Length: 639
Image (cartoon, rainbow, N blue to C red; front, side, top):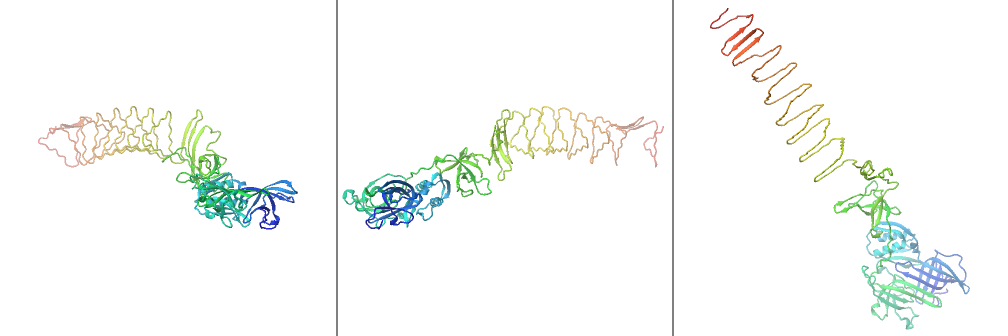
C-alpha cells in the first residue's frame, strides 16, 4: 500500500514484527470476535502474487483496520494457517490472528495457590506461561485479601483465570502499547481507555443515507436483571457501526440518539468484525454496557469437578503432628508441583467419625501421612480430608495378610515413635481376643458404678506397686480358695475391721510380723488356742495384766525367772511346787499362812500353827551355832 490517505484500503494484513505498507497483504475478507475477558480471534483471508514458502504459525502478525479518520492495529500471533484456492493468478490463505496470551488457553495445569491474593495469582500464572510485564498490565484499584485456597485442576490457565476474575470482580481486555498488544486486568472504569480522536460517536440510522460516514447505525437498549452482581447486567446495549476503533474495554459516548437516555457513556464488552473486499464494507456488531456502573463478569465459567484426591500431610520441620485448635491439618496434593511443604500451606478441615460441640472422636493425621481429600459440593476451592490410606512408606500396623482377622487402632509415640498404644480386636475363630495396650500410663475414670464380669480365670500382673483406695464399703467374695503372697504385708483400717471365716484359717509369715493395736485388743477363741514359738517370746504389758483360766499349765524345760519390782502376790486353793531344788533368795523372806504352815522333807517336818505352836519332828535334831545358842520360853523341857 502506497500511502495512508483516503485511498488506503479499509483492511491490510502484515506478517512480522514491523508494519511496512510495502509488505502488506491484500485482505479479501475477515471475520472476528473480541470480548471483555476473552482471547480474540480474527480470521483473515489474504491474497498474494507469490506463494508463501512456509506456514507462519506462531509468528508475529498485525491487522490494520482503517477509515478516513481512524485507524486501529490489532497485533498478535498466527494461531492457524490454511492455504486456499488460487484466484486471478493470486494465492489465497486463511490466517487466524490471536493474542500472544493465547498460550494461556493451550496450557493445562494442576496446582494449588494458598494464602495468595487474586493479583498475586494472576501474575504467577502469567509468568509461568512465559509472559512478561510487556505482555500484561495489572491495573486494579480494589483491595484483594489473600485467599486460603485457589485450585487449578486439569483446566487451561485462561479458564482458571476466568473463574478467578469472575469470583473477584475483575475483568480483562487488550490494549495497545506501541507495536504490542497488552492484556490489561481492571476492576474500575478508570482503567478503561477511551476511543482515540474523540470519544463521542454519533448515531445515524442506517437508512438515512449517511452510512458512508463513521457512525453508530443501530443501537438497541435491553434491560436485564442480574442479582448479586452489583447491577453489572443492567444497561446492556447492542449496536452496529463502521467505526474501526471499537474494541472491548474501550469507552465511548453516544450522541444524537432519538432516545436521549441513551446519549451517555458506554463501555464496549464485545465486538464482531466483518469485511469483504468489493462486496461488504467493514462493519462491526458490538455489545456495550453503561460505563458509570462498575462492570462485573457473570459467573459462567464452571469449576472443574474433582474427585477424591490423595495428598500428603505437611508441617514445619521437626514436627510429627501439626494442627490448629480445630484439628485442621495442612496438606500438599501429590500432583501439586508448587505446593508448600511447611507452614505456608493453608489449614484443611478433617472429617471425623463423630463431631459434636465438646464431644466426638478425634484422629489427627500426622505429617507424612497420605490422606484422602474430597471437595465440598464439588468446589475445588473447599477441600476437606475425609480419610487416609497406607502406602509403601506408611505401612499398616498389622502384619498382613497373616493378621487379616484383626482390627486395630494403634497410636505410635510422638516424637520418635519408639512406643505405641493400641486397641486390637482379633476375630480369629476360636482365638478371639481384645487387647488394650498403653505405652506408658492408663487411666480409667468412672463417675458412677462399674461392673466387671469374668466368666473364667483372671490374671493381674503388676510390675511395681499397687494402690487401691475405696471411699465406701468394700466386699470381696471368694467361693474357692484365696491365696495372698507378698514379701511384706501392711494393712491399715481407719475404723473397725471384722473378719468372718467359715472354715479354717492359716497365716504363714516367713519373715517378721508386727501387730500394733492403738486401743483395746480382744481375741475370742471358740476352742483350743495353741501358739508355737521357735525362738524367744517376749510379752510387754505397760498396764495391769490378768490371765483367767479354768486350768493353767506352765511347762518350762529349762529355767524360769520372774522379776517383780514391786509386790508379788499369788492366791491359790492348793498350790503344788515340784522341783529338785528350790532357792528363795532375798534380804527378807516372809511366808504367811492363815492357819498352819508345814515345812516337810522326808521324815523331818516343822509345823507352825495359828495358835503359835511350833512342832519340829525328825529322827535327829541338831542345833549348832558358832556363837551362843539360846532357848527361851516360859517352860523349857528337855526329854
